[in-house]
Length: 427
Image (cartoon, rainbow, N blue to C red; front, top):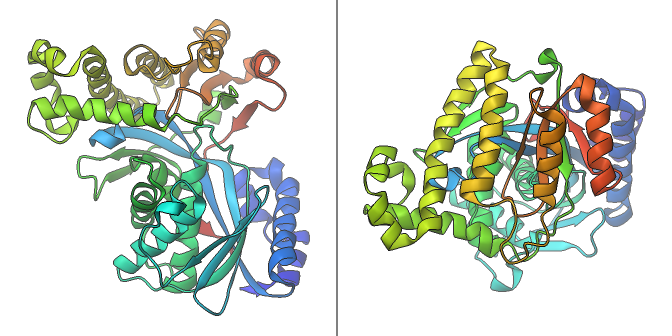
C-alpha cells in the first residue's frame, strides 16, 4: 500500500511504465498513466484523501473457439485482452465492503457478516460482491471491509466479459488484501462463477472467469468442471502480421438471459436422453447413433446445438495443435468454421424474437467480403447481440476498420492484444 499522493507521483514519474507496457502495450503508457491517476482521484472524491491505497486490474477476455461448450463440460480456447477493470482500494474499519464505479450512480454496500443470497439484489453488482465474499468464507478465507472505486474500459454487454472481469477484480482484492494471495487463479475463477450463478442469478459456465483470472491465451478442458485443465497456448498474432479486431455491433443484450439459458438447457436435454447430466458424458459416437430418437424427444434445435457442441470441442483441440505447430492458415480456417457453426447450428447470431435486428449477421457478412482468403471472422461470446471478432492482416486493417466503423459508428472497432497477465495487484 501507499498514500494516494505518493502513488500518483510514482505514476507521473514513470514508475509503473513497465507494468503498463506489459499489460496494455508500449503505445498506451501515456493514456494509462492518465487513467490510473483519474481513478485514484475518483476514489478520493468519495472516500477521502491521503488514504493508504492499493490498485488492482482484471482483464476482459475474448473467446477464440469453443462457443457455448463450457457449460456442458466441453473444451474452449480463450484469451485475456488489454481492456480491463481497474480498482483503487483501501481497507476500512467495520464490516462493510463499499464500492463505486465510474459512470454508475450509487454505491454497492455489502456487509461481510451477511453472506446469504438476497433476492432483492439479484441482477445487481452487490449480489456478485456478496457471493464472492461468501465463497471465500466457504473456502476458509478471511474477509474484511474495504472501500473501492473502479474504472472499466471493458465494453459492457459486448461479449468481452465485463461481469467476469468485475468478479475477478473483486476476488483479487479479497485474495490479496485479506488472504495474502494464497488462492490461485482457478480458485478465484470458481469463486466468481459461484457468485454469478448462485447470487447474481445468471447460469454462466466457467470459461469467462477462468480466462480473465488466468491471463494469456489458454485452452480450458471442463471434463472435471470443479478442476478444469488449463493449458497455455503460444498465440502471437503479431508474428503472423495479424491483428485481433473486435467490433461492437451495438446490439441490445437486455432480455436475452432466457435465450442464453436455452442453449444450455437444450444441450442438457439431449444428454438427459442418454441418462447423463451433460453432453461431455454422452460422447459424439453415441449421439450420432441415436439422432433419430433424440429428435423425437427433444426437437431439432436441441439436436443441432448438440452437434455444434461436439464439433466445437474437436475444433478447439485442432486449433491448439495448429498454433503449436505454427500453422496459422489452418488455425484461421478453424476460426471461420467455428463462426459458421455458431451461426448455422448453435443459432445464436440473432434472436428469433426480433429477426429485424441482426447486427452480428451484418458484421459477419461484411467481414467475410473483406477478409475471405486472407483473414478470419466469427461471432464470439453469448451471441444474439454484441460483438464479432476478426483476425485482420496489417495490410487490410485500415480498410476493415473503415468499413465496419462506417456501419456501426465511430469507436465501434477495437484493435486488441492478448494480455499475458490475469487478475493482479499492481506493484
